[in-house]
Length: 103
Image 1: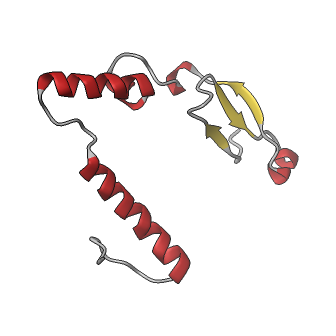
Image 2: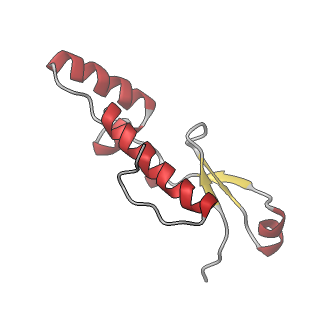
Image 3: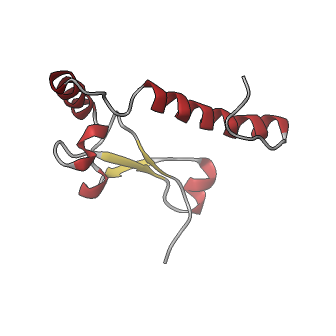
């Protein structure tokens, strides 16, 4: 039986998930740490490795050695920030926004 409730993964504690089990704990926002299943953990190798800290450093060094641009780059981050701002504006001002945002 599926139940609704929060499930939180913290980069600072990759071995655990924070969960709230049961209606009373959900209502009071009481979280419990459980061991994270292996597929939630950030691998040290493979396609997802670039998303952990060691993978980012490795990708940065490899980009320098290969004389190529690191991805994600500043432009990717800027576009991501624009999307985050486009979500925040309507939540605050109750309006629609178009992308790209006007400065």
